[in-house]
Amino acid sequence: MAHKNLTRKQREFLRHRKEIMQTALSLFSQKGFANVSMQEIALKSEFAVGTLYKFFSTKEALYSEVFKEKVFELHSILVKALNIPGNEIKKMKTFIEKKIQWFTENMDYVRLYVTEIFGVGYIDKEEFSQLQEKNHVELVDEICRLFNSGIKKKIFKQIDPQILAISLNGLSNGLLFEMIENRDFKQIDPNSVLTIFLQSICLKGTDEVV
Image: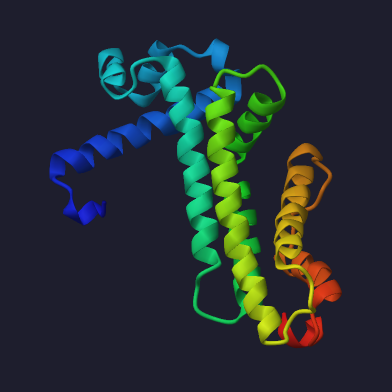
């Protein structure tokens, strides 16, 4: 639903909900789920504790919604990047740029995600896994369409589009997680990622298309 179609009360509800979730994310990422209380989140976000419970029934529910919200946010950004006007190379570059930008701007969440997935977990792993799998399949399908189009235009070599899609997504994810875990790792240049990938699949030559 577009915000312009919402009532003032509905817009205010969403704004308050977002403020609570942003505060919760900051605290969870700094101190861990077990060391943060609803009272602390309320104090930091400048809401009454009772108000928090009107938005989220439990701390676990709030924590789960923080994760879901970010998953949907990233997925939406990447799908939009793959559907901008322009040729396939431009779309690939925008996809990589938007992914790097999102990771850079959401380090609190990414570090919390790593802790949650590979450490002690407080979310419903099965539900979250199903959500991630659904988004992953949809995203790979979108990237496949891009490569299919590029192959038909003879921009890319005749390689299975699904393999190309998984490889592009995997390469960018691998570099981003290295950036998160290794403080000495330099900021990722989208052009470098694109050049590495295109050198092996592009028929026209990277100098011409990047």
